[in-house]
Amino acid sequence: MSRILEKQLTDYLVTDQARFYRLAYSYLKDREEALDAVQTAVCRALEKQHELKDSEALRAWFYHILVNVCMDVLRRRKRVMLVPPEALDTGSYEDPMPSDGTLAQRVDALPPEVGTIIKLRFYEDLSLKEISTVTGCNLNTVKTRLYAGLKKLRVSMEGAEER
Image (tube, rainbow, N blue to C red; front, side, top):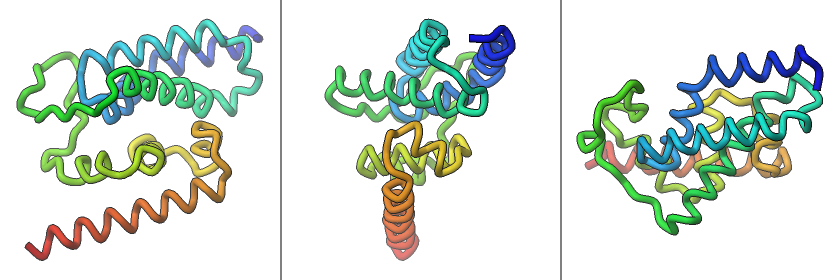
């Protein structure tokens, strides 16, 4: 790995840590587990930095690592624990949940493979091609899951408005 690429990786890991935390928190719903997941992902990235060949792929490469770490935690936990925002202690990070919580809860209720795509697209602003790289799915599969998930969210939100 070149010195320049190594510096880019280090700068990226330092400057975007709040974004990494938000993504991890969106999966884990626990402040401490999210912080641990980010730390684990950063350590793995630094251990495997020699595998990174292209600075253009840095973001997708790291998100792939972070999503895998979060999924490992969820597998170990064997269930998703929902924590109400008022139960969270205040720390150095802001609560990444929207104030009403309804949209975030609806995204969390989607199947994991669909929720991941929506979170990466709209929470982290990744392109569809980057999401394809992160998830290891075909680009057309990513598009299909994204649009199906958005349709489910729209129907769900419209149903909530009618009540």
